[in-house]
Amino acid sequence: MLVEAAAQAPFTQAQPITSVIFDVHSTLIDQGDSDAWLSIALARSGHHLEPGEHAELSAFLDRVWENARVFDPTSERDLSTEAHERVFHLLLAQGPAIDGALAAALYEAILDTWHVYDDAVPTLHALRELGVRVALLSNAALALRTVLDREGLTALVDAILLSCEIGVVKPELASFTAALQALGSTPAETLMVGDSGHDDVGGTGLGMRTLILPRTRGPVHGLALVTGLVRASRELSS
Image 1: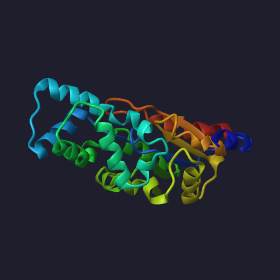
Image 2: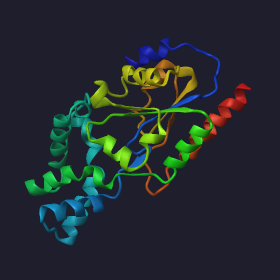
Image 3: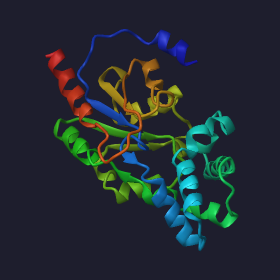
């Protein structure tokens, strides 16, 4: 489907970037340290793990979502909260054996360690100063809006589109079309920024330029590249 759409995308002259669509998780927001996530869940559940058990489970949690497509190839988890929780527990069961109460506490604490990368807010401010319209487009069936509010991102963007609200997931073209409509923009003048070479590249089928910044560790994610691309696109077209 994406290959056919890409083949049909019109070839147009490069245009200045006037709109940017960002993925959220691992693009603007870091999921945080799995050790801290586990510690929160242990405290809430009243459980205790030996140091070796703690380290083993923490390492597993850091990559717990990487096999999600094995259990959920069509991303149903991103369309409903019930499916999201079910898939999480299926994934968790592939790791070290844990008590059901701890498993429940881990799910409840998922968002507690999510925080913006240090360069996220400055990048959004810089884009606003450049007159760029910004949308967030996320495959999510979590209370992500509470995180966006808490981290100060909501007020800095023009539109927020969550898969569980619009009923479609990336990389489906309809997801990117919805974001373009929300921005009043076209593919040729929009840049998509994400971390996934699978989910976030769907807009290329519409002729949308796409920047992939794979998940990084540490407080800075390299988002200054976005404003650099915006400025470069304007210089090339002037």
